[in-house]
Length: 114
Length: 113
Image 1 (spheres, helix red, strand yellow):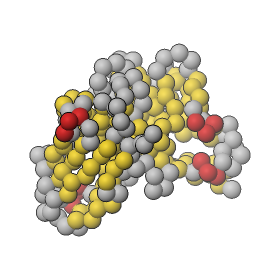
Image 2 (cartoon, one colour):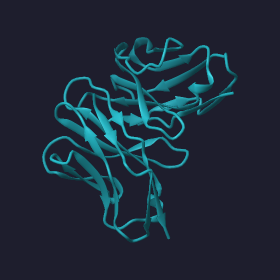
Image 3 (cartoon, chains in turn red, purple):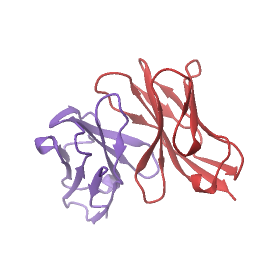
Image 4 (cartoon, one colour):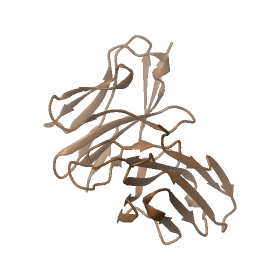
């Protein structure tokens, strides 16, 4: 069985400061990892993904994520937070290859304080 | 290009009634997924269509839920009869193939009272 853990229900950060939203995963096989963001009253928007290659992947809106195989983590980061980044962030994983379902975490609410 | 669209955006029904949710995937996307998020919990997988076939329906909670994808285009998810615990946000997503990310609709918020 595959699973995703987002240990923080909420992360508060001051505008302009770096932010990190944590994610760890468990999967049998090579992982295919995602981050999605949900703004209020909107659907899930794709931010970035990791398949293979460089451990640091860059995505939309200045976000990036670092894949760490030994720690089975895929933390989301941004060097300088904006108030407009305030939203709900979901980490997700699936097994690479074939027709496989995606498993999501519980989500982390990011609050950027002006 | 239109994204994934879901209808209705909100639905409030009484316990015991029937509700049908609709999802129109992005044109050309063979893979269609249904997910549900209940009261601040994780987004849980319900089922996965590849074209008109059910690839994986292991997440369907019980036989009150019926999903169809006629002709491999749009999909419907029917809940009959609805129970209070069925309340939540139902998301639909589609992807072109197994190696590309899924694009989500805005969700249908279902409230059973």
